[in-house]
Length: 117
Image 1 (cartoon, helix red, strand yellow):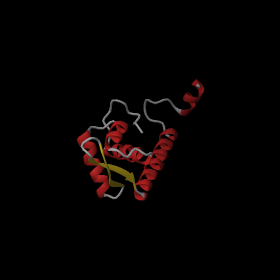
Image 2: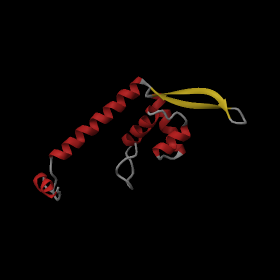
Image 3: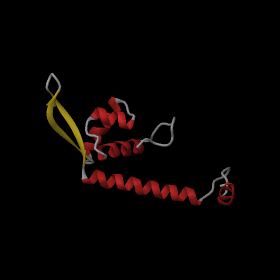
Image 4: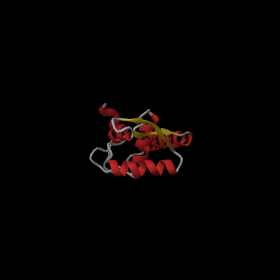
């Protein structure tokens, strides 16, 4: 779920993917999604509302919790959200395959890399 580019700012696409993965893996409560995706509260809430508006996740007003008996809002991934998440995964595989099959200036060539292993 966490991105590999530690220390770098995530793109909006990576944030969306991370939230969809968290919700798709069963995280329903906003606080748990926030911790799981390593996002701040306000940007996460904006993103969750955006994903609800797009039909990728569903907001569910569930039973009340706590001493004040406040309503608890949870989130579930929709079928459309699952399709988008699957698309992200397949796209990442294609990009990785492309990177593995092409060398870039300054990077070791495939033959050199295999000799070292």
